[in-house]
Amino acid sequence: MLRHGAYAAMLLFVLVGCLPLHRVYRLSVLRQPRRLLLAVLPVAVVFAAWDIAATAAGHWHFDPAQTMDVRVAGLPLEEYAFFLVIPLAGILTYEAVGVARERHRRRSGVGS
Image 1 (tube, rainbow, N blue to C red):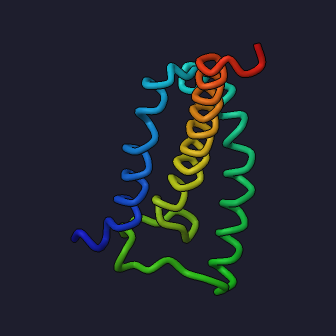
Image 2 (tube, one colour; image 1 turned 120 degrees about the vertical axis):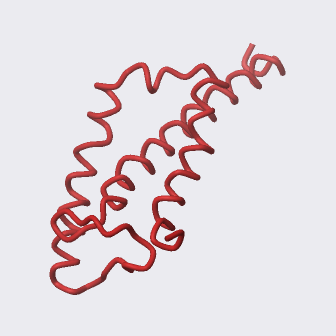
């Protein structure tokens, strides 16, 4: 059973690692859901379509031993979650680095 959740566990691991950045750095990413969706969804749709086509053509597959059994258009649910979780993690990390750099700049007096 644990093996079937390997992909989902990896996504959960990423979320657990990145979501605290929102609070620690007082980010506004999650308080702007429309903006976040406008940044993530168009790309997610394109890559999901690409994955569906590539999987249907046999260019690659998803190991059933590491994914849950539920499939939508040939893709495991985790793959759709991937297209949301990974960009969210990237955006949170990018924003947190920006805040950290600004704090460092202010503390060190650089640019004053």
